[in-house]
Length: 210
Length: 124
Length: 284
Image (cartoon, rainbow over all chains, first blue to last red; front, side, top):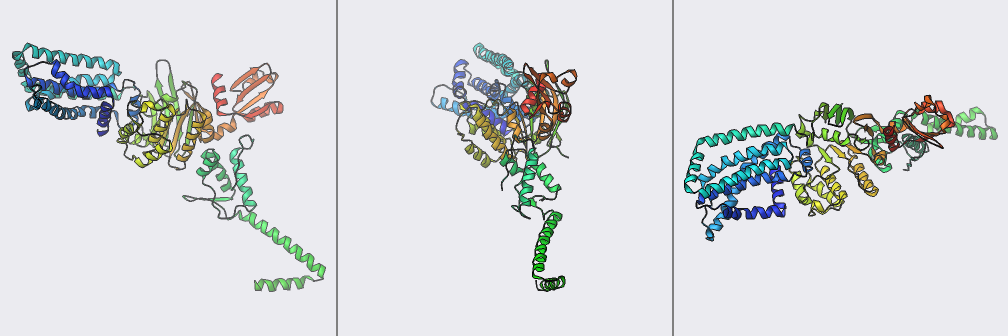
């Protein structure tokens, strides 16, 4: 697992464009998703950031050829998939720390009043991230990155529109949204989807001609 | 140790190698117990394949010229004992021929030469 | 006998091409050259061995074990070098090495540094700045730095100059000084193999033409040159490939004794190189 994560992190940080993105994405989000509810802001940042950390490394296989190297290493297809699904939680932890520090600084410098650590939101964000990745991951494991990206875009833009919408419509609707999230249902749904997605990805990737 | 192979010769490379080594052994340039280059080292030096050098060595071993010890390498064999013996016998025969010739010139008879031989056998 | 690589009746179907009934075996400690014209199926075969693409039929065993069931432990002992460099271009050599090394149980940092030094590579250089030759050397350094028992190379020297190819040959000679190491090397540049290969598997249009010890191949095949008057329907059958001109013919035969018997000394007989064999076998 360490190997996969190491690869992803090195890829993420080696590219200037990625580095730029990683550093400026948080303020970008704060700017785009205007909301009076700082808890909500925190939630959006957690989800968006973790999701992007997980998905971006897939894009680096766009040339296709890099898959040949990784797949020639001593690791089975199943393991590749499994560790990828596991790594989402690892990225989530990184996001909590990174966003936490970043937002704390923003808060301390009185640029904007933001939540930089909120357990309630963390607990609500995890299932959402799981649901999104469970939809997008299989696409990357089965199709060429160019095609899979379409699925990713659809999911991500939907999330974004939803997020900006929520905040615009105001407090009331957010409370409703929150209510929906409160149900234990979402957790079970997320876990269920994640596991199904994992098994599906394993099946798809195992039988794929690279 | 000198082994040169030619790519343009009609003689297969493994034969060129084995005959050159045979030659060196018979001429005495390689002696019993001498260590030969390893199969792989020779392949590398001559820039040929391992199977070729192995074939050359297998042939030499079959004909009794060399012995291979697992893990150690190939040595010149306690020479083709028959051949060695024959060679040495020939040398002795030649020397005895000289002795006989000289003795006859001096007028010695067989019994006197035999006596000399007996004394020598006891002394040496 | 545990072969280091054993392929039996391998089959793979594509839309326009089928790899059919591919079989060959390699004993440990030897080098097998895998030759064939472009498009013959060499890369496909290697990708099948490495499980990068899925086979439709047949069996592949590496170190005596099924290549899919024991995929991970097998790959831990395989060093691979491909022709196209498939690395992440923005990474430095060191970064790429760090990623790859973490997967191998027997990674030898000391050995890697030795090769990097030997090959004159700068660990801080980005992969995208490396020439094709340097990328190949980097691949080789990685392949040789985790105590691999089988080195698999897919056209590693195509596009590289002869000086460079000789250097690679020297490196391979050093590798096989250890008789537990084996090499499987595909190429269409047969001169590289003529010296070092112990076995040759020749593949054409998805089928194995022959898989034999190199010496045997070179001893049985020959180029025959003579006057066209010597050719008739019967004698043409003796040749695998024939090139006829106004001033004579040149043909490839795999039965030298027969040819000698039929033509006697009316023809000139020359050694056939692997390239001759490949060219004549392919052109028909």
